[in-house]
Amino acid sequence: MVPFAGYEMPVQYTAGILGEHNHTRALASIFDVSHMGQVALRGDDPAVALEKLVPGDIAGLAPGRMRYTQFTNDVGGILDDLMVTNVGDYLFLVVNAACKYADIAHLKNGLSPMIEVDVLDDRSLIALQGPSAAVVLSKHAPGAEHMPFMTALPFQIDGSPVAVTRSGYTGEDGYEISIRSVDAVRITELLLADEAVGLAGLGARDSLRLEAGLCLYGHEIDETTTPVEAALTWSISKRRREKGGFPGAETVQSQIAHGTARKRVGILPDGKAPAREGTEITDADGNSIGMVTSGGFGPSYGGPVAMGYVEISHAAKDTPVQLVVRGKPRSARIVGMPFVPNRYYRGKE
Amino acid sequence: MSDLKYSREHEWVRLDGDIATVGISQFAQEQLGDVVFVELPDLGKAVEQNGDAAVVESVKAASEVYAPVSGEVIEVNSKLEDDPELVNRAPTGDGWFIKIRLSDPSQLDGMMDEATYNEFVAS
Image (cartoon, rainbow over all chains, first blue to last red):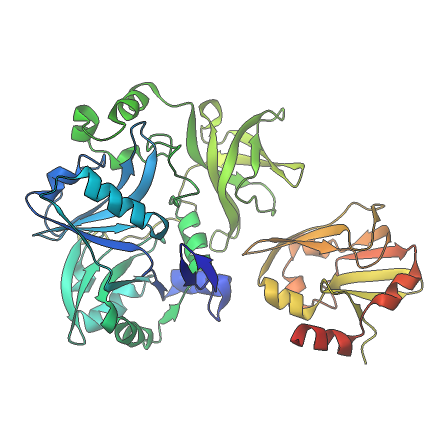
């Protein structure tokens, strides 16, 4: 167990990081992510209100759909990243644990007093991730297997109400399940009783999301990085790029039009040596061009993988770079991400 | 009874004449978890007792391996390059790290025998 954002969190359970990682990609794992903040925004058109704080298209989010976006500051830096679900009569937000109190204050200060910021601190959140997730969950929540990626539905599991989204942060198919905390242990144990399901901790969560090429707040993204630099421009719709109306819009619009000085990229070390967070990236002549933000051994990839920021002149795919690991330059190259193909369920065509 | 001597930093030494073979303990490999990379020193490097000798990386993190004795590195286990998991499978056998030509054999006197080491890690 390690302290994480004020919670005692398991880095690994008995299977160990590698075992938990591989089990998730092969069958399914449950991650306890109850430390994350769950917030409901209620009132008169909370979607339009929330767009004042995020660059994502929230007003255009249909009922039962969810979307990834960021809270930005006045210079386009990222205060936090979050998932927003249109539940129908309110918006449901999931924010990072380390940022949640700041996010809640930001919502209360930044939104009209007509919007109620309801912190759902009586709810737990578990993620069921992996290719067996749909088979497992549909035994208890029939119909969940038909939900496409990034949609939401309410279910009853064992007589308790749960809010299910087909989403996650592993690159695998799967779900996040918001449960009243009084029901959380019972429902988790019910799902865990399935022979396909194991428990997985923070360590496997990190190696899975790294292979999936996904950002982790405080590592790839923070107040000094913009969504454009972080290669998250895809999360900003055409309307929002054109019309702006979110904090730092001028910066973001200018960066989309004219480019950025640096960019988040995937980096593949040539040898076996992992390059961890903070590793300096240089060009072939040893000039510093950037820094690794996350790196380690990718169990499913079968070797070391990393991501980080490099100067835009070196951000093109296949550009050779060097990673300075413990003083020794080691060759690597810029690659596209994800490192392991994602397997989201897009629904029947 | 094992002929290994252990350090408080969880390295072991097996002495053959004035050559010390060095590795990490069963306890250390369990704590590290799956080893994915081992960085070994250059041949001929002079190492100091308790100074840096190698780096072992697990899925979790990179950890220093200290030289339990001073001397010159005369051999490294090149098998670990392609098969770092040998450290997990055979930590006190084929998963050895380096061989050191001892400069001060009396340094072994301060190390623990296996029984004492097992008590040390259990406490």
